Amino acid sequence: MATNPLAPDWLCLPDDANALADGLWPATIDRTPQGQLLIGGCTAPALAAEFGTPLYLVDETDARARAASLRAAFEAEFARIGTSVHIYYAGKAFLSTEIARWMLAEGLNIDVCSGGELAVALAAGSPPNRLGYHGNNKSLAEIDEACRVGVGTIVIDSLVEIGRVAAAAARHGIVQAVRLRVNSGVHAHTHAFLATAHEDQKFGVTLDDAAALVGLIRAESSLGFRGLHCHIGSQIFGADGFAESASRLLAVHAALLAGGPVPELNLGGGFGIAYTLADTPTPIGELAASLADIVAAQCSALGIPVPVVAFEPGRCIIGPAGITLYEVGTTKSVDVAGNPRLYVSVDGGMSDNVRPALYGADYTVRLAGRVSAADPVLVRLAGKHCESGDIVVDADYLPGDVAPGDLVAVAATGAYCWSLSNNYNFLGRPAVVAVAGGIPRMLVRGETIADLLARDTGVSASTGPTTGSTTGSTDLPKEPAR
Figure 1 (cartoon, rainbow, N blue to C red):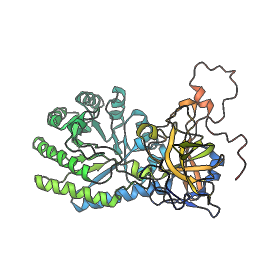
Figure 2: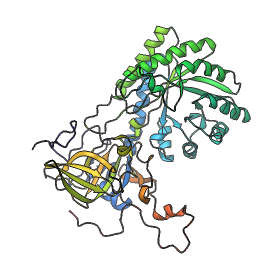
Figure 3: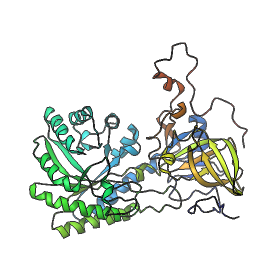
Figure 4: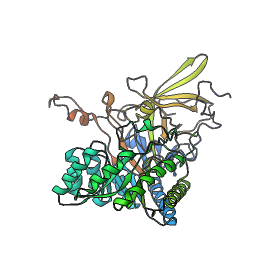
């Protein structure tokens, strides 16, 4: 069977459209003898029946193992070069109280970037000194709360924040540890290292301004300068971008040592994962070794001690541990210049995964309730929203008999799906369920129509029933069993 000409160049016609490729799915993924998708010992049909669809699933064992192995790899490699390392889980990828507890239990700190994320981390029992606080426009109230509770570090993002953080720290009688976020001019997506226009962004200050701003920080008795911070991008493969960024930051770091201690260097995060078979992320152990070698070599060349180094991964920990289940509602075959494409519409869409619409992100989809020997066909997994750009999976192959009532699963949705979810078209955000050892456990309940109407001040007490799901229809008749 020939590859469909409508398929993107990177997408290969599969030998088996039911296969679950290594590296794309949670570690515990499997199929039952009947072909049902099995995750964390739980079958997809049973989970859909209990919790409805769309449904976010997180393999707890996989997420925790990824956190633990990443921390161990980085600690070992940086101990090899004579220093220690701090790993902060980037809460923006996906944060709930339970996930915060998993990360803390596996030895990670947590990075937050809003008052809401701070509240979630604290509600999880996070020790405040294990939290880092980001953000380009932290409100005065957010800064005050961070200082009041005693967060470990605040990342200063601009000149104006120096005075704001200093005043809040003084008001609470503390010396607040801070880092200064700088733009290295490195953009990891293209590795165009010398394109200074990449500094044309809302985050951080230029390297040229860093020394003057560090001087202002050191002049504030209520602030304790810890070091520089930089983030060069997201979904990064390889270490080349980090190498160039670290080189530039360490040159400034070395110069700052003349004015006082600079105990730390934060090189950010953004380590990439595989969303499709075309993606080739760098193994974490290899990345940790490369980054340690880069820092050691540059410090040796500059003749300075190796500082404590910090990183902020999120996607590479929680992304592959998550999948999303949908139910197929309609299918429609279209002809494009003589080539077929099958539109498969599901009961969610850009309200539960806006990344394809925002970034053109690609994903992988498979049947979740059964397997099929039908020939693979090129599909586009579409959402139910009133937008032509409401696409969940732009291109993949499924068995040609995919039909209404089928369950499908989209891989690697653990990061930036729930955290970017929304209520477009008044769909409620789906539930999040953790699975481990054959036991499902709800982490975040799904929203109902009543939840959505509760904030509408025009709703009277006499309004009709509002307790049902806003997405699935688990209380209504289903398609005939296949």
